[in-house]
Image 1 (cartoon, helix red, strand yellow):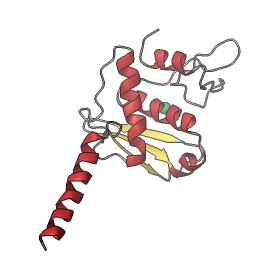
Image 2 (image 1 turned 45 degrees about the vertical axis):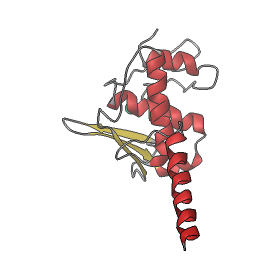
Image 3 (image 1 turned 60 degrees about the vertical axis):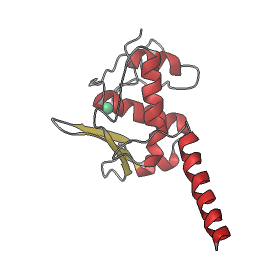
Image 4 (image 1 turned 90 degrees about the vertical axis):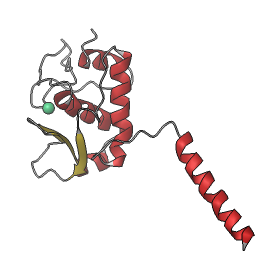
Length: 158
Ligand SMILES: [Zn+2]
């Protein structure tokens, strides 16, 4: 009987240590867990550019669910006490991690940076900002090579 108790306590100690030691998981209140790493990356990329953002402190919630409106990948509702990011489930299921990031960062640009849409573009027709509405003439040019430029622009570091 004593042995059995011993075994159980070891088990719990290992579990709790594992949790404390995992540096990669930052949790966000009222945010779907699959969005957490993107939220954390947003804070990290902001900090790299001298902008301190704490999405928990700002009370930003987020979820993935079906958006009824056609061709809408994400929304950000905000008002006095509301900062809520919604990512469309169908978009989410079909998008690459980079394109998921693009949409989430765009929505957080509204919800945490209070940025409006901008349709400015380069001479090659690429959007000059991650904050393009998607309804203008420019095409999205977000990829591994251009990512740094777009994040500099997003966080006002240009
Ligand atoms: Zn938008």
